[in-house]
Image (cartoon, rainbow, N blue to C red):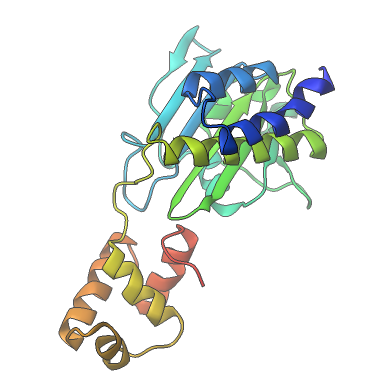
Length: 247
């Protein structure tokens, strides 16, 4: 693989960020990733609890090597998506030795679990690069690529990650990608939960926001249901995990 392709990704990221005349299309974004050796591509938002992927797919071109067709439906429970939610850094999955169990990060490999995406990309012969995107709060997403020619060294992963984050930020800002996700907290629910996360009581939040304590509790209850949480502490933890609030 020509390393100059990867060296150019920093320049491409800058064009997305600052050059108003640049073609900020999804097609352009995809073509740059294809040039890196990707034969399979998925760009999507990460689903919130109990939500489907129906409105979160930005671009999918995922040939199913088992059938000769294309994978169209993606399960929100796919293990690759779960790993993208849990990891903030890009990682590589090798399907070698007939086991889908190696995640190459800074630490040791970990069990992956069931992934239709990995199996469709070649199973035990697949090489998959996953790039979680967590710095566009409250949107969370990922870019998942597969291809035997993909470079998977740390430098290449860093460049691809930087490019993907910059490009998606520009595409969201330009309205080319929907920055919303079904099931998100409302602005008021976020505000109430943010204050709860720093130790404010319902009475204190009511005073700060000039609302009743009953309304504060209603916002907390709504947030708990959206996050599929069992109590207030769990709600805060899940809202942090899903990028709905920040400390």
